Image (cartoon, rainbow, N blue to C red):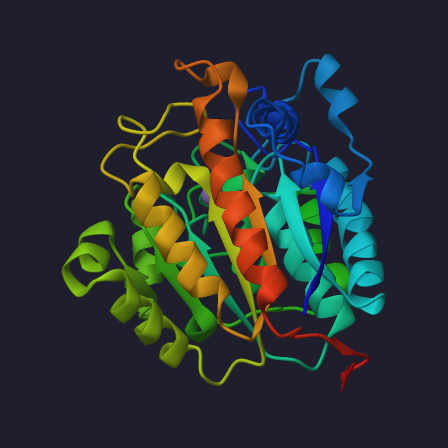
Length: 328
Ligand SMILES: [Mn+2]
């Protein structure tokens, strides 16, 4: 049985709009209003943030707040390492999605010799680098950070000075780069990409299950195919960006809402099936932004229902943990 620990990363400095740091608290309010004891049932740890830097005006950059994001990676990966070493299964509740690269760094820092698969449930590919980004927001870069990908073939920005230094630092964080391979990534629901990302998706034959693919094949078949595809990985990390869900049917309470996504039912069924895989070692829920929610707190309420059901599945599952490369 897996022992779950909640890791709260309230950082929002990788996002372009403000408010994702309130996402975790909005999920907690949803839990209280649902009369659930979820947050009383699991140990939790809040990692420090650098969100106070947002009180100052930010300089334009091709990787905004990158220096502070690397500090957040340090806090998060340290906390993950402790969590794994104490035999817990970490569920990361994150503000913005740049967190995922810190999570991946924490997993690799703990299990440097394990091959890590990544299941990315998101409307976006998050494959930008400072060289290609149209926004400079690092929450569009976590997979490129983990892959050590600059995408110089599609370079449009001149990256230098502190930004370049910060980028090199993020890619090489924890002394391992790349931390993951293209062939070990599976996308679910990705539907809002830029040309520069499409180039990488094509070049590396990235495994993608669109919303339509999932509906046509059926969720169980798609999950079986994904698990088969990641057969050679030792561990799997599942990253759930709530914008993978359809903003018109669920809520716009997320930084970059996109229509034509999964319904709550589909996202729930998809994640519960994915989480059953014994190799899954970490689950992350991210990008709830209650300040953008036109339906009050519906995005957080939806995320909470999914989180509660996910934790129930994880608790029943055999522990995937190994300590120092050895089975615990
Ligand atoms: Mn994302």
